[in-house]
Length: 497
Ligand code: NAD
View 1 (cartoon, rainbow, N blue to C red):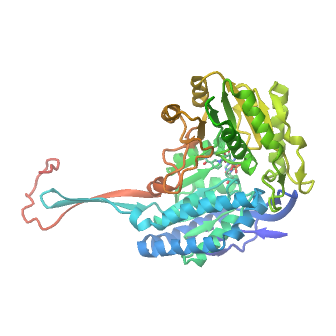
View 2 (spheres, rainbow, N blue to C red):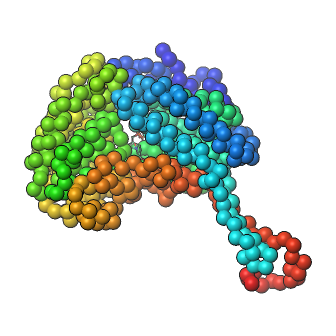
View 3 (tube, helix red, strand yellow):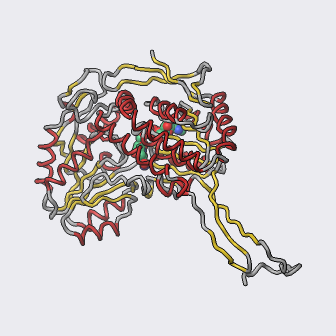
């Protein structure tokens, strides 16, 4: 059995773990590896390694830092196939989807390569006689990154490159369900010349997370995961005096207006609803069909689902893989049962979908419900699986009200050919990321990613410019040189003249 251990101070941790977790191959349902879970000793070792590495890395020139990042980018690009295979093996998403994840991760790395330009401060000459003022951005110190299972390569790389580029030292706690991608990333960074201790990977569960949240040497936490844990991380981390950004769950609505291209909308609903088996925080889980197109749209979505090939993500032609664990598959299936009990129309039942894979894999086929009501658990809860709900409303105003009343505000999309309606929607909707005829509006690497409401706690989005802001603090210097007539003693508040 393969053993996965922590990466601390530039090498694999050799200590014996008191607790371990199972890592599954979701397509076969078999345990593929054991991962060590951190206890106090490992948490202390990882934070101590980062703390020791920080002063040297903080003082490394911008040229050195960007050279390491460019080197990492080259290695990642050259060996992305290996990372893609690791992601599929432990997460279950199909290879092509994993390749998309790694490509988006590369965008975040490429953004951080420009760190010399990104860390430029401001300079104002002669704000008062011979007085100059300038601002500089400095790293925080040891920063913690805690990531979810659904993007084991991309989400760590939303944060790690910017954190390192800004001169911080990182302790990364990836999901215990698919931990290998993070170790691969740490190995590549080491090969690219990152000094030992600047990036550490600590595996584990709540014990590891709490260890980072409470540790006095950890200055900030970047978290991505479900809303209850994001709220907990935000509250606990800030109580311990840390800067925290905690990205949470989602319930993304796709509004389809009657004038839209229904084939385009149906393609988008199926792609964004069932890609990655619905295990994306930007998955469309609710289609809001504005009268009178409901019947037509549901028929088109149903047709497309019938052609989807579900199976082992490594097999050619499979478009949707298994769910990440048996427990998660059972939880998602329980929502299908509850939807039927609550009286929603089950249009396509994924429990009977034909699978191209091993019988013990964690399968659930694409499932479609129509006439879902806002009070049903199908609508109220983030299901995080291949279950798409269609809700029918009478007007644009009803659709907008529904999206805005929802507790989540991660992503949303509108499908229409009316530019005025689209512009009104982007202005009025209370959601952080909006698509116009685009179902998964994940911002490119040089913008930042983040939701509103219960989809993000804290005020800073992930990666891009917000990432540079999060991982640095500003210092403003006021300096006077070459001024022989400084005016002598003056107890008044300094005035600029
Ligand atoms: P999760 O909340 O279960 O776990 C996320 C991280 O928190 C993991 O590293 C996990 O080990 C840790 N954790 C789990 N339980 C904990 C506890 N009780 N105390 C402390 N730490 C704990 O999330 P997940 O199932 O891994 O990922 C799926 C969730 O992540 C979904 O809700 C999805 O919407 C969300 N997500 C959000 C975004 C975003 O950008 N908003 C992106 C990806 C995923």
